[in-house]
Image (cartoon, rainbow, N blue to C red; front, top):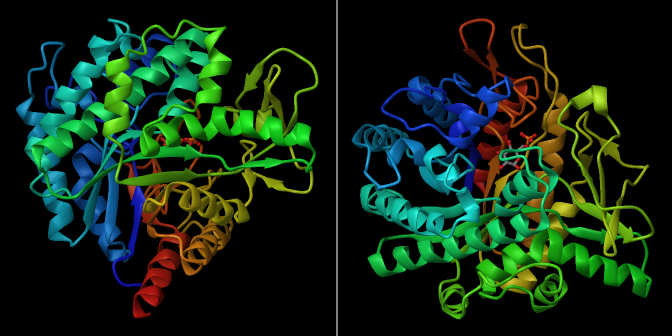
Amino acid sequence: MKDFLWGSATASYQCEGGWNEGNRAISMWDRYLHDNHLENGDVASDHYHRFEEDIRMMKEGGQNSYRFSIAWPRIIKNAEGEVNQEGVDFYNRVIDTCLKYDIEPFVTIFHWDLPDYLEQNGGWLNRQTTEAYAHYAKVCFEKFGDRVRLWTTFNEPRYYTFSGYLIGNYPPGHQDLQETVTSSYYMMLASAMAVKEFRNGGYQGQIGIVHSFSPIYGVDSTVETAIAARYAENFYNNWILDTAALGEIPGDLLAELYGRCDLSMMKPEDLELIKSYTVDFLGLNYYARVMIAPYTTGETTLIVNNKGKQAKGTSQTIIKGWFEQVRPESSQYTEWDTEIFPEGLCEGIRRVWNKYRLPVYITENGIGLYEDVTVEQVDDRQRIEFMDSHIHAVMQAKEEGCDVRGYYAWSPFDLYSWKNGTEKRYGLVAIDYEDGLKRKPKKSYYWYRDMIAQDQKN
Ligand code: BG6
């Protein structure tokens, strides 16, 4: 298809390594993983040194776009906002390499690696972080805006704030509703501030946001389930998508939170800004739908399986008074409890397109697997099947008239998975961490290449 972007996606912390090189500041993830003696991304896929080889492999794999994030701690040295030229030089090289191979760079400004000097000062609970972010975003536009046409302000603010402040499995590891609401609000405000910088600076291209998209399915068609589904839509999707695309935080969500939380940080001038600076497009990361039923009993419970097969079946979500998640028994699941449900991607795109009428990019889609990468070629037919069914779902939505403009596999090569480590593999290219980080294309890499070639004939 002409103009369709076929690519793959990474995040700086998950692939770069080089954590103490190039004058990079420390990120909150460095501190958290080091302090807790957990598997970390100090080396990761060593993309910091091997990006040229990795991008060349994308090209040889038929891809025409690369979604990657810029590491804030590489670009801004300290709380005073000083720019680190070595970091700028690194991303200049990455972008120029993309362009050399006719690969469209699709840049995420923030994919979770907050500089530790900001986290130590309250991170996303502190309004000053919004100002620091707007400054950082502006530096990115100034330095790279002559070559980058597609930007996104944030990767998955919902997943970030829920994991860090509600579930507590990501740094800073808290479980606090007020903090979840405050950090979410400041991130969405910061996103609008970056859009403002982008518009006022008159840069080329477009700016969007990437959302961790879980279309909600009710177990039945009763009124009770419809009400529970509305709670779940607000919880999982609307507060990001409505706020970014329509400039409005859902009123019924605010009403629910009003009695339980302090919302005094929401200033009228902020809400004006959010209203005025909405995004140009939506990036959807799709891994699975969420099926829900009305709340019955129990305390709020949020359990994520970050342990794989040894914890299979332990994931659980109950939001007291609102809804509870149901696990459809007839479905297939990964070892990390992610349901495999390609139909949800087509239905999800339809819903988003019908509601917001903004261009959509599928900014992540993939399957995490245990794989033996010591073999000559990893025969990852499960990944091929997964991608094939999901790409069909995207194409169906497109044929129905939804404005879908790109698909990005997560991920071009194996990388570090937050809290799951390197044993959870998503790559089209295997990385043998035990053997000099050697790159070896998996079967899916060639499958994707041929699929793209076929598509481009049409
Ligand atoms: C998305 C993130 O939530 O899912 C990625 O944007 C992440 O950073 C991906 O790696 C897969 O999740 P996980 O937990 O399996 O690595």
